[in-house]
Length: 394
Length: 219
Image 1 (cartoon, chains in turn green, yellow):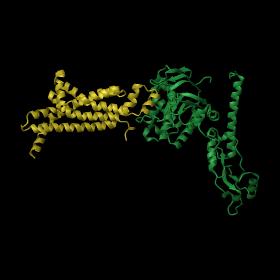
Image 2: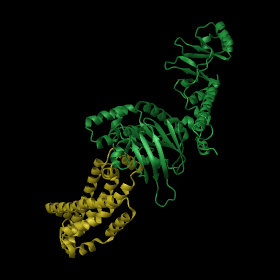
Image 3: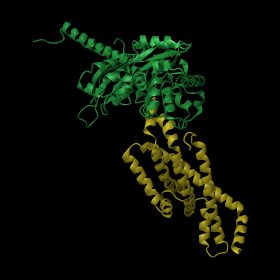
Image 4: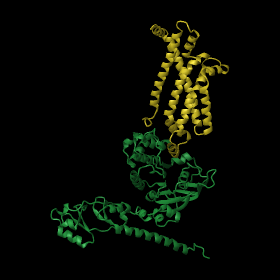
């Protein structure tokens, strides 16, 4: 990495009275604009490692650089004002309004009132809260809303770096999923360098551009992209931690738009039943998709529906179900597909027009591709090693 | 009732003097409370995070409260003499425990996550204390101040034994003249004045507490 945003060099934390260091000589480069996840079992030192970056915990040894500057010796309060910080409990100040909570760091940095006011409005909009929220108090907000305010507060002075300690940990699973997606969308816009701590490997895979899997003593077991961690775990510890179903987890990394869609037989609404039947016969599917004038999925029909005399074709069959957009993950598509009675998820564009379908064949192909990619990577590494004589031969 | 009639006659007759004594009484209580707040909150702030000093402060101020007031006023005569000064010193000593204890409790009950997020945003030790911890602990601290005030309104009467100001004077004068026609009225009027003062101060604290506690903390 040429110019990492954050560089850890030999960072170590020893606590008095403990034989083994809590964090043991960590070297790590964190690239600009990426979400790097520290994940590992509880007690592995991931939170300690993160808190040494803003020096809530002072390292015993080693140096930390942010944007090339050694921050191990600078005033810790000044340092922290340049680093966004979000914790699991959010820690909003209950006696201050949402606006004042967000204004905390700008006030310390001496911004003038009108600039602060403008920034509060911007941030509330950014995290999807109405401007009226600024005069409310934290107790008047739901858990999800507080979480968003916590993110807005951390972003107040637009710091290049954010530290997040299980930021979605205390939120119910459904809201969490929504907030995670929202945060990923937000990050695509703001491109912060984010260090994110979690114990949940699924969250790590979903949120991370890179994942550092830590074992006890904050030793890095593997530091790689989610894809490579899933397809080529470095050792038994990583494989075990990632757990069963790595192939299925990988489906969370691929989007519908990245795979070749299957085609499904379609006819426009109003097609003569004979012609529709002919299309169905020529295909290898058991059903046909009727499209409306805007090319949107309209009805699923089978041969039996087409054959019916009592009702016209556009009222026969079933309303379309299992519809996904291209940005959905294959995991989403697979879930939809398993629930549908036709064994396929229909893919539509933003206007709802039919693009294709995801069926078992699509998913199986995607998994094969991922496996092949992983194998090719491992082979490339093997070739590289033998070319450079990396392995000592006797 | 003959006593009742003559009691109200007494109060009406002595209205101005009684009002003056009541104001004196209120003054000495409020001055002592003000000093006790400065010292008590200060001690709480300095000791709440360390175990030994905290226990020591609570133990010492606890002992103060157990000294019989008559004895304490008497003991202060030799170093401080008679009058207002020893009275204020004694009253401050009595007021400390509830204020110190509630300051410590209030500060220790602040959610650690809130303190951590303040620290993580770059708030230094004193800013954190002034902007976050004390405002959050305030409802508990002011309860302690209120309790201390109630204690002092009563104990301040005893300060009359060392020539302290306030309604206590009339109580001791009456005690010295037990059996004379107006002794009982004099004592009753002073006691009534003390009770009324206590109630007025209590109401004042309710209002002050409400005005000084953030809307975000109220139910």
